[in-house]
Image (cartoon, rainbow over all chains, first blue to last red; front, top):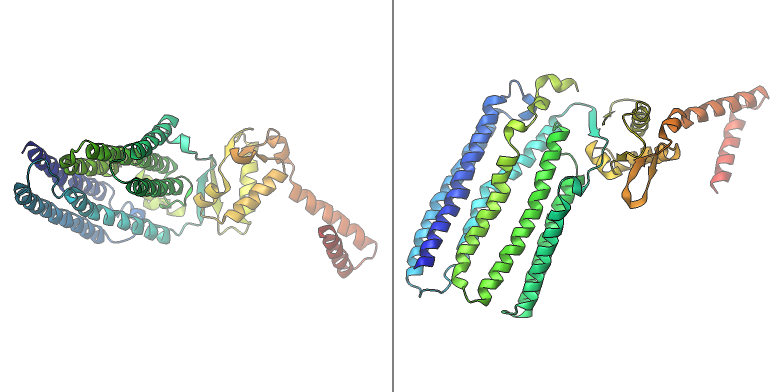
Length: 286
Length: 126
């Protein structure tokens, strides 16, 4: 009963945090940009008419509201389902993951539209001048060696836990280890692409770009650490037959990932710190 | 230190790069031992072909303005400032002009000079 109550609280927190609080933050941030950096003074920021961005924001909020409602419907179903099951047994443990993936859809769509936006900005960039800083970018300019070592140690600890605690067959452990290797390779690829890849926003200042690269790289390390810790805890609760806690852990994990990827973006990459002068009309000559 | 390339400029892109690095060294904006970005990074930042940047780096290395230290990267040469004042390309043109003028004064025709030049270049290549 207590674990059910705990899950309700955690799941309600997941619903409200990812589908209400974060979207509201995104909406406020976008409104701030629309109001303070309008197309008239900052035309380079708007390769499409403002109405298109307003519509995009409305759609983003509408999808989030739908998911918010879906979350409470699913919670009601879970309440009915769990009442029919004996205590201390796992019930619909995949619910927070399935719902969490749904919750990330609007943010994923927002990322895609962000890529389209910079593509349009590049196409609209008529300037023949290309600028770059003549200084190298290295991984350790953006993250401390301690964080890199900590990530590697935690990942090795995960592998050890998987191999030593043989609750399941060793085949399961190998599948999980292989999956995490692939996941870490993907994170590494994103890291490399951010560090040495093409400049997406043609107008972005060097300082802003460095801040963005630093934030993204640190996020990759935190996500890798979170994944290793999550899987280790998951394994531990399986060994100690606490599977009924899995559903709570899954929900907390998604909230953590949401906090890393969305909240920290909004907090660390504060819109007031961005140099918007590069998008001004008079810079056309450059 | 910021570098700026104009893709509409008739001056080749690699020459613009070489000139700007040499100017930066002369103006002491780049000091001996300063690290330079990798070819890939600079090419991506300038949205240029990496072969163009590699060509510029090769010329700068030949001129003793930069030096590559294996996996550690590319750095400004300790004698970069002295070497930046020597323009090998300009010296090449001056020497060739003097040689061609001397040959013409001896009565050798343009086509004979061209054929001989090609033969010498081919012989040196093989």
